[in-house]
Image (cartoon, rainbow, N blue to C red; front, side, top):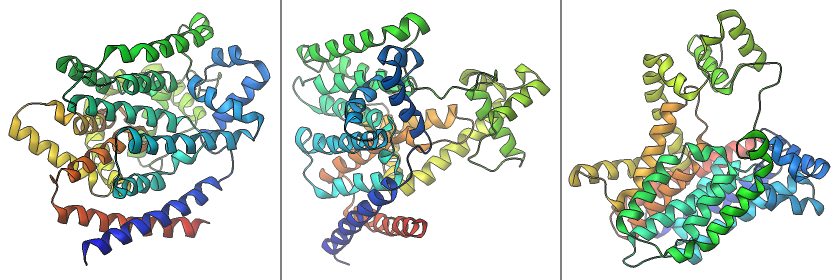
Length: 403
């Protein structure tokens, strides 16, 4: 099949996949999963005010974007609508700021968008992902530039991401790596940091109710019931123990009562209560789950990215073997591998791939940049298009059967 026909069917399939995904995910009932938490946060702001809500714990940047719309539409529509606009803003960023003009890049990105679905749910995932993607792509762009670049987008994105989700802590290694690379290269115009610095001061000020009463920043939290002493780490660790014993189906958790009963029966120290404790609690289990989770990420990552994840890892390994050192040109693929390894290591129970969305999109960006430079064989590129075309039809079939 000629390449132009392959690309045509690829683009057409993604377009159909996108339209069906929009209908499928947006028609889901309100309040499913974590969406209920954010609807409740909006209601709390309306009833008790911002100070009380921040004291309880909310995602301040996301609520600032969503809450004004609740005066015009229902909370769930406001939540989902903002997320659609945020992802649209990311597409505009790629087009206007990064200058990505090739339609194939947007087809790759929209395939991922249509497959995962969580960008169309009313949670703060989209804001967090968009900001981290901009941060990582800007890092690459700054390092690749031969002159001092603006740090405005880079710093603004990381500030907003920092106050959006507590998950930013897990991404700290990537943030530190980016900062070290930029400092080493002495890249970036410091004057472009003025507005991001003011934004940082603003968010710190908005967090005063949480800082003064809770001694921590305000983040949305799925808190355990007050009737239990169990932590999320303990619940997740018990889940994996039960799965390994065949007493629980994979990708499920015991409820809080079951977790508390286990602790009451076996003692408070029978389950690790922190991530560090979980890593050291049973080293053999940690190593076993690491390799299993890493493989699962590769398998399900292939469902979301086609051949891109595997290609990025192979190219990174090849470059590292050839150069014997980590170079700034390898920042994006290194970030992808680093975060994949971290999540595979620290999550003892099943991994939610939405946590890896920022680096998955970064993998798409890196793949696209290499294709534009002619560093990936055209036959491999076309093979990926064919594979993703087949995956999109498989995805559409799955959605249609569930309507």
